[in-house]
Image: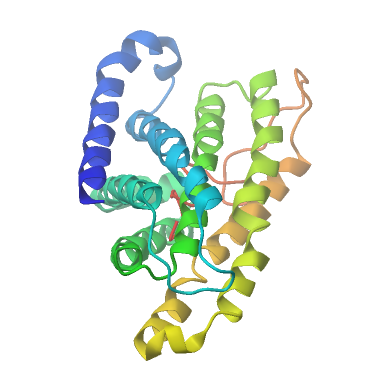
Length: 272
């Protein structure tokens, strides 16, 4: 678990440094139009590709191999769950540092204090709760689903890159949006009723008072930001131009869709 968290943190640093070294040569023309804040975000957005693929690679099998009885609150975490949790938390720690190191720039990117907090708070809760959950074998079923939601990070970051480089009328922008919406619905929204049923019907005696209150305070957190981002996605989709059309895409704002990275994830990844 901790080895994979450290590995993920080092991978995030490696991707960030590689982007700083290589992006000006590879994408110099596109980056020349960006302001100073967006040039910083370019490199941090590159990092989101890591959890999209690395965490999902082990989180999806973790869901499929979960062998706990239905509505069982306590069940040991599998090796894939431990690996995925470590990598996700390593990335979240990196992301949290980015958020805290430049709050003004991050708020500008997200569209204000509220969207900024929607990433900051779930990250902090995840870092506090997930190590205990997977180590003690509590709420592992939920953690698996939260982990696999990292897969939507790539679409969000790709949208940002396309918008910032003036490619909002391209086929890539259109089809990225068309793929992102059902994927977001599948891994972040459609699973909510199942997770609610899993908790509601679980054996309270197996939880104990402290675990019960901890679960009540944490397990619902990812649903709120995910539903909020879904509303922004839907608002943006209403104005999404057809492939190759001249209609243009909506301006980036808190009213048209997630502005910067993630998630929820992560970011948002949400608590991730």
